[in-house]
Length: 161
Image (cartoon, rainbow, N blue to C red; front, side, top):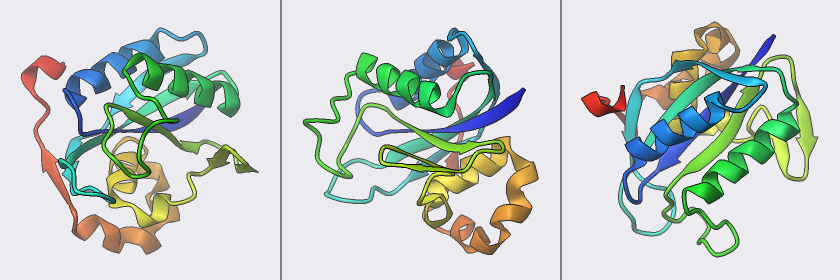
């Protein structure tokens, strides 16, 4: 079995609840199983003025294609009120699910690039990824400066399980 890492982000509504719901929905999907959850981080937004984001990552056991994983992530976003057609680029959102990494996969398609094309530029994605996939640290060591600023660990609420 291979694994994948999904980045979670949100700054509208209750992102922690959305993250928990997304994890449960992913875990209930045939061919996926949640193996680990990262620490929770707060980050300043990129883009227009808006609330700070919460970010995390999930490590998934993967027995479906990266394309099927992306489709499932988009379905889960829609179930949480995200409408990619109407939103502002880099604007606020209820839930953002990004395929950050798939073990052994490199792909460059119009709507899916793995590893995520800006992973090494974004501490809010890279730091949680390394929480759940520490074996990837040597691959991303050159981006370690990202981990020093712009991201702050916050405790998971007790209700987040």
